[in-house]
Image (cartoon, rainbow, N blue to C red; front, top):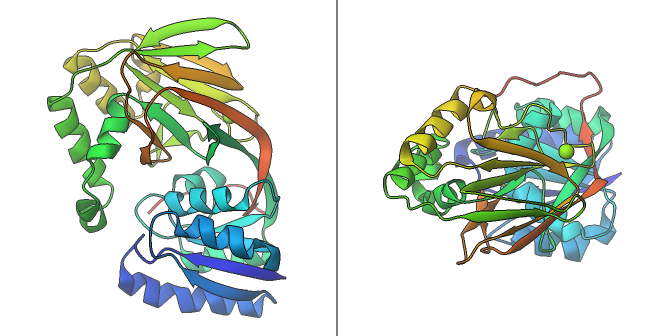
Length: 300
Ligand SMILES: [Mg+2]
């Protein structure tokens, strides 16, 4: 068994990287897995390295956050190599959804003796995503996050950005079009979710599953600042299902459009503006997860 270990050294603190990476590699070696360690140096680097070296490996191990996982999946293209995740960095929503331990050494043990689980992969205009894409306030928040602040204070950076964004926000209308049912609807913030968790341990829609072959579309129909603050509070306390003026749809494909181009985000990173066609490939990706269900469900 051979694996590429893709390390994003910028995802977390250097001291933790120096502490955990050697331990992780020791677990792999003891488990009979030979490895080649590669460090990402810029955005998109993981995609290029995986595309170039995937023939060599039986498995790709990601030592990083959600952004690095997405880059690796993009680099795999249509080749069906399994991936493993060693959570490292600010946000590891996918690991949370799949019950992968947040302790890197325990996560390395899953690489050695875990089982494969097939999950859905979303695509927006041809680019893969694992968690969600969105437009509106939510996407602006991502665009406004200061990356240096994010490295220092972590997840709180998103909350601060959300508040700043709300204070200066002018809502623009977004249209949702679901070809398979002919449905058309409009609102001010659209989230298309593949994973049931959002920006951490928060949930947008309870029924969302990462392997049901469906995307969950959540459309917020109010534009006032008060409504946006309610939305933010609702998410922080997992009460969005009680919010008024929210429409839910499930589909395999959805189009998002707006009169003027609107900023978008995918998996918590900046993405090109609207219009967008979003679709899902059912159980397209194989991920190593713990054999016992529920192991490692507690986030840091
Ligand atoms: Mg789903």
